[in-house]
Image (tube, rainbow, N blue to C red):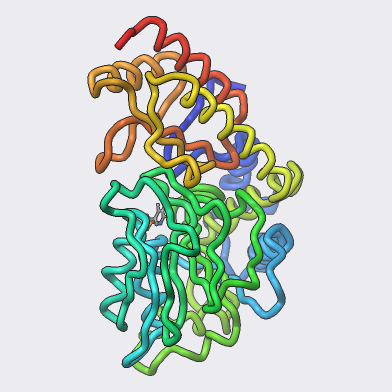
Length: 361
Ligand SMILES: *Cc1c(COP(=O)(O)O)cnc(C)c1O
């Protein structure tokens, strides 16, 4: 294996090395059929098998009930910010949103184009350092759904458990899907851009309860109507072929490594290593309040911005890449998605200790 650094990038994020190696072969010559994966017809029996495998594994790993459709779409997670309300709301309809970070804020802005949006909770006043508990907000009876972002990638917060509501839940799980167990049947719709925790950019997965497919009004364009894609098994037009293939390979890797339950255990261990380090000293300060800490994105600050810059630069020289926080809040952020190896977290913790000793505040 050639030199690979530990890649803490928030997204696109690190992928399993064995998946990249397999993909490198398949892109040139898929299954020895003499055609590369990304030059193959999406309607060929070979590629239909790729799509079927990805869907089957996703259903198995997330225990998706039969009355849900799985869609492989393009346009990024950001297109779901408008597709969700465009399809699920309508004249005079209302939805409740939890504002817990940049991605929910953007989603709220789009949703307001399609209906009445009740922002029932916001943690913006405290720089999105937490997510609410169920007793901190109320959803009105006439809301169609409760929308939330399960993991706030930029601020490093995560709902420790999925919110409970009488209403159906809708969630953007772009940065923590497949990282922990949850009950799909409580949701009307789940979406996730693949590039954080399950594949490359360019593919977005939507899991939608089938009774919701008939809700879209007549003015919804064909390509933006979930039903179009559900009716054609994501083959209404050319789907994101490469993305579907990589997601399938990542899911094979995940299944081999203990599935969602197995990876959740490892994810909890990885996050605990980092948070224990942060809690053991005043030198590093976590951004998220303890009850809201993310297992996927660990944000922390050093005593000064100068020390943070030095920390990030020196980390890079020892093979710890991508630790710079998002431009909107600065500081440091270690993104430790499913495919990020435990050894890399151990190495970061060692580096943090050394850096503190060598660079007193
Ligand atoms: C990265 C991210 C997005 C944006 O995804 P795009 O595919 O770039 O549109 C949306 N939501 C969350 C939670 C994210 O982490």
